[in-house]
Length: 344
Image (cartoon, rainbow, N blue to C red):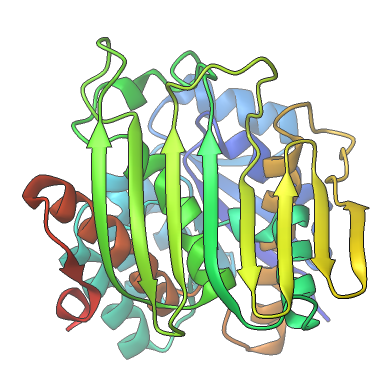
């Protein structure tokens, strides 16, 4: 199979992880990069040996010479850049959050579907090794049919030092982190019919919420809780681990801090180490996320080569993005929100 040529737009904080990942992906490589900041463009271009460099995305698309584009910019630019990709018939990966509004996200999906080009959202958390292990254990029938779950990310880690813009938005933890945790809940327990959410701002130096608790009703009949916090100090900092509890008709499952997976059923309890691999370019504690970046990019290259839909396609991610919008709506109104009304 011929190697796929990619272009990356956005050379900021997280894009360096994506560039490392692309260097390891089998069947794809980045041949062009774009950023409005010449200094970041030079830094990333020199580090990864990419000669084709642009400060203007339109010029890059006009020049062409690549098979897909990886959009690693902030949310307000996503629709414009995806529409550029559509105009040039270029398959696109889009960083999360998908779009500024659900209406924008729907329009982007519709545009890509009409043009017949693939669109994947870079929703990498479900690709983490421990999350994949939970999915595999559940699929094996080890705990029967799940009826209750908890998906928890509670930390006191200073995310603002590396990404200061996170402190400036009116929305914070649900849009930036909760979106991942909600996607994991969907991935493990299925789509959601309704939810109720409560939020709080503990850190006085930020504008948005840094704590959220969300109750989900799933199509399967299961109930789950998604709770996220960047205001929780613990004796051992768990960042960036997502902890999971599942109760099923035949047993229970617990993904605990330190990447330990315990499955308990009639046969007893089994403990398994499901820690992520520390890739050569990765660093602790980020290695869990960094490994999943490589995994989702390999998934994209494989699916694009086989002309198959990705598991976090734009159409699929609309269902996760709807949960984010519903959570903010519920937190503001203190009411339960029906998801189907948002997806019409």
